[in-house]
Image 1 (cartoon, helix red, strand yellow):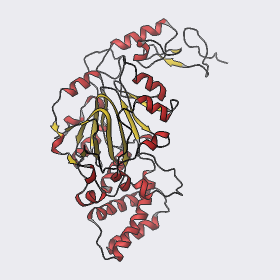
Image 2 (cartoon, rainbow, N blue to C red):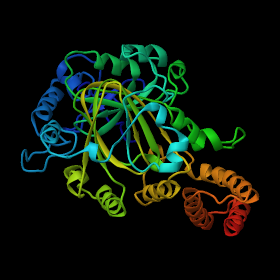
Image 3 (cartoon, rainbow, N blue to C red):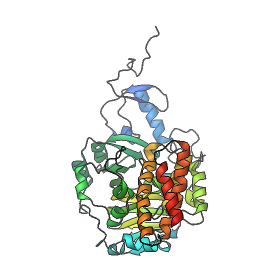
Image 4 (cartoon, rainbow, N blue to C red):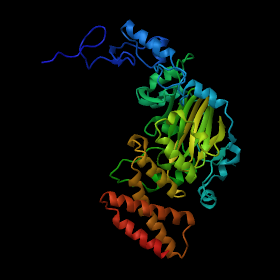
Length: 429
């Protein structure tokens, strides 16, 4: 029998009960202890038990501040990568088209389902006067420690190391400790804390328009075989210089954001056919992180969202986000009837890009079937009342029919009868 591999300076075999870390340079594994010291915290490691690893860590810290991998030997000879400190400084010095060219400035009371059904929801909306929007939030003095109290410090969260554009998991309590530390050796960003299942959920009510238009809220059946998706309530906590690279929200969902305190800067790009094609090519490129997508399109708009402001981003808009100062924001995602075709296009793009399920809208195809069943009833009622359906609904149903046909070819589905009836009803109307 072969001897068990030995690790660390103590040359002991692997013990599942002990925490271990791998050195990125020497590739040996070391036992870790409680996190102490700025050097170890800077690279996201526990304190090693061996001086040799300290040497490796020191080398890693010194090299390549403009690259995700600090250990690359050719310092300065490769392009700047997104999220690094050099990238953020260059981004802040760039010139962009003003967001005022495309933003719709509206009062909260005017942002209604009726208004969007009549005028469309194709451009971002900025709301500074909140009355009538239906949005309920904690007071601006609500802190990251308050989040820990309401959500629970033991909750495991996904955190982004911005300079490396890499995800890692940690307890919420550890992140709060990092956030409240005046000396932060690196930039961490939290953008995926969905809190619908926590006590904090009672403190937040989403805008009326997002609630009333949401497919999940309107069409998801109580007796569904699949668990109901929770994507309407996120808390985003980012420190200064946090950056999220260009993306389209999962399933082409529309998004609402509200900056409780701090400030965020959005870089917005229209989802035109040309821009979407460029985006897909960029997303699948091996050097994606080295290419600023805003340079690939005709116009990229800069929109500053200060404290107390709400931003609504429509379906499919490509955007990047810079946290220009420590910030807490709330937001949520929702699918709706106004831009069904674009939602489906974004979903199919995700499939082609082989996006992991973790980063896709939960049970997207299932909810499309539920929506199809409900739109059938809507179209029937309109036909019985001799009322022509609105154009956005006709176009949306056509896109949905095409998608359902495609999905039916992939697998046998009980939704075939629904598809047949929708086709016949659409033909009649």
